[in-house]
Length: 473
Image 1 (cartoon, helix red, strand yellow):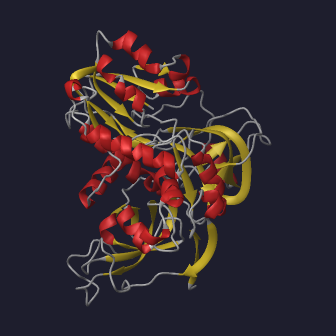
Image 2 (tube, one colour):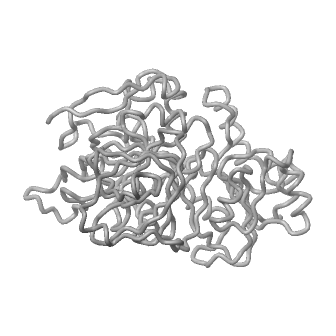
Image 3 (cartoon, one colour):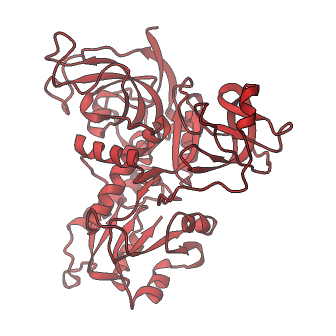
């Protein structure tokens, strides 16, 4: 096979309007000359068969805002992906055993491509095969699914920088009081994920007045804003300590179009550059933004290691087939995803913990089941199907149900109204199954952000000892 498919755009506009699924040659090595400006010298390159791609709001801005004269005329969008290495090239490798090689064929990897590479080269994650500099990839940790890996790097890097710049001390155990802010529909979810207190912003208009009334006498040590609320920053002296940092992903524009985006960028720069002192017209609190990250290989590795250790966990909103990428972007553009939106590029991938496809409004009673260790992958059972049938996920057969999936590592995943690919299990395995009354859930702390942001799906235990933190979600 020499041809593959990729989603491409050549005109500016919203993804569901400008994206087209096209065939293109599978990339080969060595990379063509001249080398891109972000990698000007010969170094290790890899070709990856993409398994999953993570969708990010930043890609929508690139499609709607970036003119053709500062990018390649035809581009593949997106930055985050996972997959398997099918080819490796190193400039000093004559025998296939260069000492400086980091990758080999069949290695499973995670990658995050910076805009400095995607825009001038047209390379992006929404393609079946991708040729990239190896510096942008790390090996997938053992026990981490392709889906989790594809969604962790950019959000994880953003979350890591938000926490680091907030003034938290790296390495401390969380001992502070965490206040989360979300809509009422997500209050119980956020509480269950570890927040000490949750505020429903829909019940308080303006929210800043409520925060002032409740926390002015005991202000926060730091505020981590994962959405970009300018109004909360302007009022922050009323509920943020004098030397506290307001760490934000940026400023949320009301739309994805040029005028609103430019106003948001201007406001970010004013927040960064204007003197802090109120005597000079400043807000009185320091604003720190993460919108222009330049993560290194070491940064990528650090996030992958955190995912592998279980320090952070990806919260998934939904996973979409490659052919339905436009619909996935519509969900992302709605600005109310409850976690990461992923696209399954390779439909043959079979080692992921669960693969829900958002399709139906059919309602069934949920049920639980453990996964017998003899069989790989996800196993589930539903009482509402024919005589409590058991199914294995890697098949063309499908079951429509909401279900609580209890995995071998004791994690519990809630899937609401999804279609799961399933296959009947061999008769001899059925005796290994029981429907438990309750399955233990992992004690990992996670926060699922409700609205659109690059760190909307990865969070970690905040390294804060004895401090008070406010996190608008």
